Length: 397
Image (cartoon, rainbow, N blue to C red; front, side):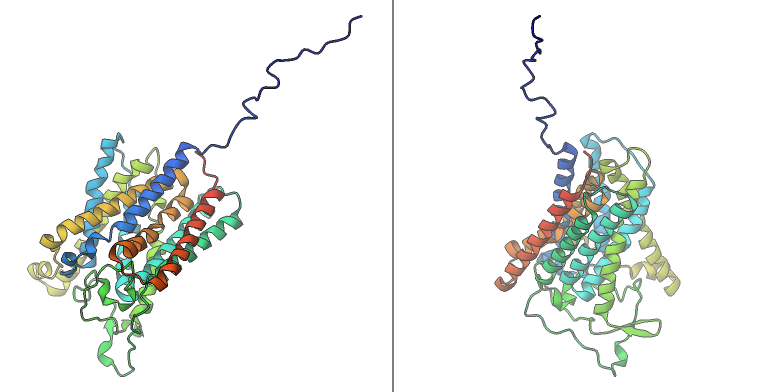
């Protein structure tokens, strides 16, 4: 009897598909991170055009600056149709506008009263936390380890605030203290009054002289005067810091409505809806402002006359450029949120603070050598946190 033979498959010793599989990054993830980079570049660069001497020569009301941003956001949004994107619209875009436009107003108030550098650190870091909470607790976006993911978020927040803190010049005067007998310093908090609407100008704030400052023009400051709310006085700096926190918490949710949109209305498909919502809310704010003055002055013409000027001859080009850059950043953040999720995508876009700081250091050259090293150390912490958060995410491609 012949011995049994075991047939040998000649391909048995060749590597099969399972053994040679290598970890590849899905194209969707690469698109998401590239979009987050575009978002950071756009958000971090939009203030550069309005830093010039021409733009700083006029008083630009916060609502006017917001209007330039909203208008360019609306006009540029239609370019997505040239990219092959079909026209889609969802009313959730109006909800996004309700988040974004008021947050922008709070942001400007914070800049004028608490300082651009410190306020933007609070805004960006709170946006990171709010975005990640939405992604982790509400949308249940998967992560490998929640503990490490939250640690990464804390790194990002600490790094962002560090960059904003070390963007401030070391030669800044102490904040003006208000004496107890300054009875004429009280001012009611009335955000709709034209008289209290100072220019969109960080020169009203001596603590923001760093890479993130928008204006260098000196003018009389009202920052020393307290704000009267419900019979109690509060320092403008404290109210400004609270405004920065409100901006981050409220504005950090501006892309959340996109997750509730029905059908394929996410990513580029959501850009038009967002822009329509932003412009609609901005127009409503103008109507409300006009109505306020109309009730107060009892005259249509006088109510129109006290509305702030758009300064078209001076601000048309820098305002349109700033709005366009912001729109590019917005599109990038929307696409990033679609592919990376709310927690990772919008958080990564907050690296805009790093971009604006680089503009200040290398282009405007307003930072000092003693603070540059600490700023770069904070930037390293921020980037490390973003990379760690990206590594911990389990976003499907």
